[in-house]
Every structure is written in structure tokens, then in C-alpha cells.
Figure 1 (cartoon, helix red, strand yellow):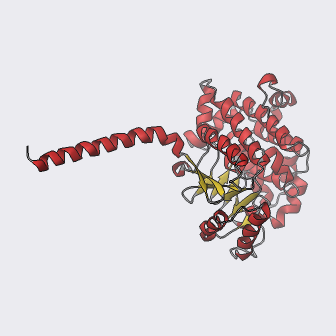
Figure 2: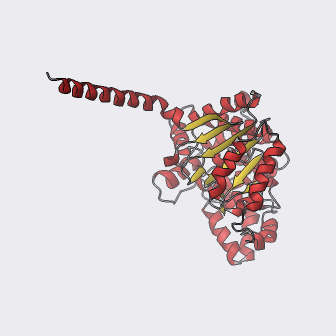
Amino acid sequence: MRLWELMARFNSFKRTNVILQHLRMSNHTDAAGEVLLERKGCAGVITLNRPKFLNALNLSMVRQIYPQLKKWEQDPETFLIIIKGVGGKAFCAGGDIRAVSEAAKANQKLSQEFFREEYMLNNAIDSCQKPYVALIHGITMGGGVGLSVHGHFRVATEKSLFAMPETAIGLFPDVGGGYFLPRLQGKLGYFLAFTGFRLKGRDVYTAGIATHFVDSEKLSMLEADLLALKSPSKENIADVLDTYHTKSKIDQNKPFILEEHLDKINSWFSANSVEQIIEILQQDGSSFALEQLKAINKMSPTSLKITLRQLMEGSSKTLQEVLTMEYRLSQACMGGHDFHEGVRAVLIDKDQSPKWKPAELKEVTDEDLNNYFKSLGSNDLKF
């Protein structure tokens, strides 16, 4: 056998080996690759890395982020934590609820563990002793809101898209929605929770969901400037963010999309029952009111009633108390009909026509509602 043949064979063997090794690696690092955790400059950087799935959050990602967040919080060399998403389309489009629904139907533990550990992470972000900066560029919904809204700083761009669309899938605005939504101006949070209304770009900042607004093309420069800080304080970090915010000119003078409707929103959602809210919207009869009515009428009646009570109770609770309440609600929803039907209609069959049970608001009794809010005893979420 000639030397070059030997060489060719050897190279092909080497190549095969490299490929096999890579395959083994990718099997192994698949879960690890879904979220990247790196120390850069003065910061710990969390990168959500599932661009194909719009960086949707799953349990293995939660299980990687939580201990690392706790480590960085204790590390004297880490001065801030940055969280961002890959791919430009989404920061994080929500939790991986399809997997959760499938697990709940198969009686697997994932539906208990996912919500429990996700809410523990939401709380850890809220109580984090290090400044936490979320770059909420692109779609930020549900679970993605939970990863950002409880931190010190949230930076929106003109491509940000915020929504809490859970009532459309037989769920409720969780991840601490019962805490932050009723604390937005007036009854804006109630409106967003009921209708799943989408806020875009600078409106995410004006609504109070983001703390800063930056042009998307400046985002990587902003990040580099944050990483280059030497032992920064929270004030130093705020100064950098403020500088970028002040220089941003995109939609600077554009009025808030809901500006002209805020007074009406405040009066509609001051009603004490979902039935009253609907009646008031019907009586109003304006095109904006009827548009919202149309959206609300598509939602799960059970979800609407749960959500109103969740926000009313949450308005005077601490975040931990809210998350404990929401964990009870999440588990009741897993055992009910509407969540699985919502996932089927929106994510699996995509026919967008869920058959809710009960189908009418009046069929959702106070007793049904009380059962959703009942303590889980030793299974309650504890911090």
C-alpha cells in the first residue's frame, strides 16, 4: 500500500473519529448548549441559546441558570449579571409549555417541577444582591417576562415585543404576573392580562415594563461598555444605561399607543367581576372597547376569573406570596381541562379554536374558583 493511500485512509479514519466525537459531544452538550453561562469582564453573562424555539425556557435551562446565579451573587469578582437571548428575534418567547402539557397528561413530574423551579428562579432574580440587567430585545412573553421583569434593569429596543397571552391558552399571567401587573400605572396591567395586548418598542418602556430604551444597533456597544466597567456599583451601571437611553432617538416623541384609552381602561378594569367588565365594554360600544371585548371573549372563562382574582389579591402581596399563590394555580390548571385544550388549539393543531370547559363565565362558580386557590399543604411552594 502506497504512502498516500495510507495517509488518505488515516485522514478518513481521523475525520470519522472527529465526527463521532462531535456527535457524542452534541448529544452531551445539547442541554448544556441551550443556555450559555460565562464570566466576561466584570459580569456574569447568561445567554439563552435556543433561537429555533425563540429561546423558550425549559426545565434544564432553569436548572443551569439558578445555581450559577446564586454562585455569581456570592462571588466578589462578579459585579453584575447580564441576561440576553440569541438570534435577534426573541429574548425569550415564554416557557416550553407544550412539553409541560404533555408531561402533565402523562402524569409525569415535569409539570410540578417546571413551575416550582421556574418560580424559585423568578424569586432569585428579584432578591439578587448583584445588579441584574436584562436585554429584552425581540419577543419577551410569559416565562421571558419572568426572567427579566424582576431584575433591577430591563433594556428594551425598538424590536421589543411584550405580551402576557396566557388567558388564550387556559392559563393565567404567571411568573409573578400577580405581583408586577397590578403595580403598573392605573389598571394597565389588568388590561394587558385580560386581552394579551402586545406592546412594542418604546411602549414597553413607557408602560413601565422596561427601565431603559436603547436603539438595537447600539446594544452590543452597550454590553461592551458594561463589561468594561471596573468594580462598578449599581449607580455606575445605571449611569451607563442612562447615557445610552438619553441618546436614543427612535420613536422619542411618539405617544404611548394606549395613551388616549388609559382613562377608559382604568374605569373598565375597576369593576369587581369579569361579567361586569364585559358588560361595561358592551355599554361603551366604541371601536376600541369592542375590539377588546372580542379578544376577551376568545379567552378561557376559567382563566379570566382566575386572573382577575390573582391580580386583585396580588396587588397587596409580596412577590413570594404571589409566587406561592401562582404555584397553587399552576397545579390546578395542570389538572384541569382548559390549559391542555389551549395548548392543543394554539400550539399543536393550530386551529386557534379551543373548546373551553366550562364555555360560559356564569358556569365558573365561586366554588370552582376557590378550589384553584386552595393550599397544596406540604406541596406548597416554599422559599
